[in-house]
Length: 64
Image (cartoon, rainbow, N blue to C red; front, side, top):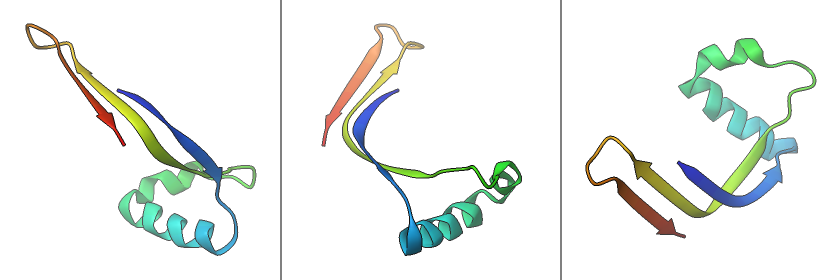
């Protein structure tokens, strides 16, 4: 998987809201959060998925 996009540092209310969503889906991840942890939102612009387990290889590109 290759993924390119625009990364934005999350802060304030948006950070609090998205952390709630994230930890509700992945509660185990909270154990790695420290006071120095920062969070980014990445909005995709281009994604390529390569499946090398097929013959021939399958490559799908998404321009967003």
